[in-house]
Structures are given as structure tokens and as C-alpha cells.
Image (cartoon, rainbow, N blue to C red; front, side, top):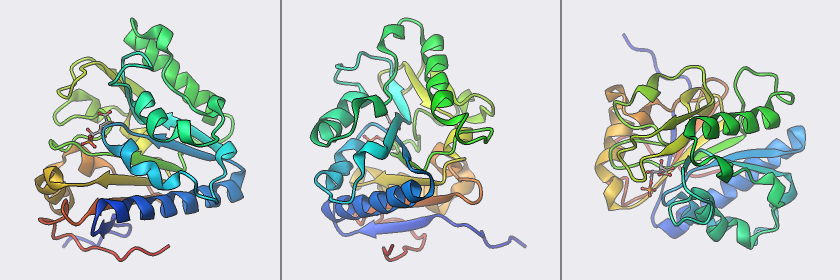
Length: 258
Ligand SMILES: O=C(O)[C@H](O)[C@@H](O)[C@H](O)[C@H](O)COP(=O)(O)O
């Protein structure tokens, strides 16, 4: 007999993307205040793809303490910071250029190491160690919040179905040179880091996510990369989706409350 999951993912579905954007901002602001009250800072990791587009609700929000934010990237494409594929560029365009966040609190990849992907990943891991190791004595960094997207094949971060990186247990940051989603060279946080976060929230919207969202939420045993995101206790997993993406999902929705 299987036991009920003591810490199930929470699914929030909103009628339209604009509602999701507004409520995601409310959620991030609340998690930010809780973290700052606890330890005086807020550590966040952001994904690329369409995720930066959903952060607009934070712009002009009166309760955001930008000087306490410390932002890393869940994954990054190995390209210069001003390249159209750069996740740092997307987040800068959509959010950081519009809010008073100190530049030194944003942690992009070291663009002088683009020709040496192994060193690039190692250096990014050292950047995490500098931020976390002496402050949280845990074996893995504990982000206050990690925001993830999900691809139509069920990948998240740069963790793709069937890839050997899915079984990485030690490294905090890894690299891949064969990403099926272009560009092929990327660095990524690994599951041990993602699954040690206090809060992980996926954001998925639109028709293109309908089939994969149903598979990931209703058939997690298929083991797709997004289904393997399960923060260890006391961490929590949330899904912010729009009703269009959730059309085929049976998994129960939870009304959004804080
Ligand atoms: O840099 C990246 O490519 C990502 O971080 C990746 O994991 C992304 O979040 C998903 O592919 C979803 O992308 P979309 O939101 O654009 O579908």
C-alpha cells in the first residue's frame, strides 16, 4: 500500500498569465520578507526561457527590499552577457534594469571563461561557495527560492531527459556541451542544489505546456527531469501555471492564499 505524500507539490492555476504574474510577485515578496526577517538577506536563483517575462509584477512593488537580494542563475548559456541567448541579459532587460538592485548582488557567469566550460562551471560553483558556505554550514547551498521553467520535453534548468547529469550527486554546478535545446553549451545547478532549496517554484504557461504538465504532475513516476524536482524536507515545491497550460492536468489545484 502506498503512503500519502507528506509534502505534496502545491499547484496554483490562474485564469490568465497576467493573474499569474501578479500572484507570483506577491508570493516572491512574501518569501523575500520571511528570509530577510530570518537572516537579513534573500537568496534567489532564476531560470531563463520565458521565466524572466513573468517577473514584471515585482517592478515598482513597494515591499521589495532590493538591497537584500542576492541573485544567481539556475542555468546559463555559455555566451557573452550581451548575447541574445544570455539568461543574464534577459533578466537584466526584464527586471534588473528597472529596479534598484545593487549590481554586485547579481551573479552572472564569468564571461572571461567562455572558452573553458569546465573552469566556467567550477568558477560559478566557487561563487556559490563564497555566498553560502560560511553562512549556511549545510553540505549544499540552501537557496531561499529557486524559480524554474519547464521545456516541452520535461527538462528543467539544463537537466534534460536521459542525460547523465540527472544522476549527479556531488557537484553544485555542472556543464553540458550537448544540450538538445540550443545553444548546446550551458552550465546548470544540479539536483542536489535545486532539491535543497527552501522553496522551489515552477512557472509554466500556455498551450505548448499542456501535455508535458499533465505528464509531470500526474505521472511523476515516469521520472522526467521536472518530476525529479522534490525539495527535501522542510523544503516545498509550488507550481504557478495558467489555466490554459493546466487543461489536461488531473492533479488537484490549491486556491492561492498566502
Ligand atoms: O535557459 C534555459 O533554457 C532554461 O533555464 C530552461 O530550463 C527553461 O526554463 C525551459 O526551457 C523553459 O523555457 P520556456 O519557458 O521558454 O519554455
